[in-house]
Length: 193
Image (cartoon, rainbow, N blue to C red; front, side, top):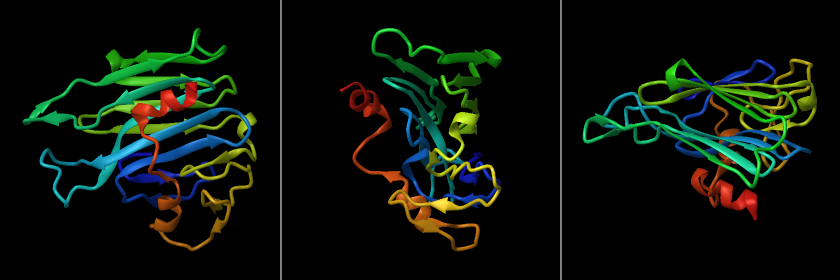
């Protein structure tokens, strides 16, 4: 996923033009999830001309959450520092790893299932790549689509219905995965309850 362009696990490419918080990946059985927060980017004044892009990512592994936050990356024309936070309940969930690379400009979070989320930090946004594992087969939902190994690129809305319209802007599908009541910064509170 770069800027507002997404490629699903099965290879469908589309644009996600909305701001807000979205579920990129959610395992249907295990307690694993990746969320992204989109805001306008592309220029420092964040005008309507700017496309939304991912500025923060939250990766949940059972009751632990890793947040990488680049939102509002410019304040008064000056760059703001990247925030990386780990919220955990006791010890980090077994077999979960968080690796920092490239002087803090790249992160790799591996879930116990083998699913890997790679985050590249850019000037005003984040690029996110989620690599599904065998445990994800027939168990994924979200903007990254369903991973079924058949390459059919079916998009399934949050309510479980298929979104089968062709095109580069499946807006109804994207909106179904936007979260309204929970925010990235409070995800850890919801998870830990």
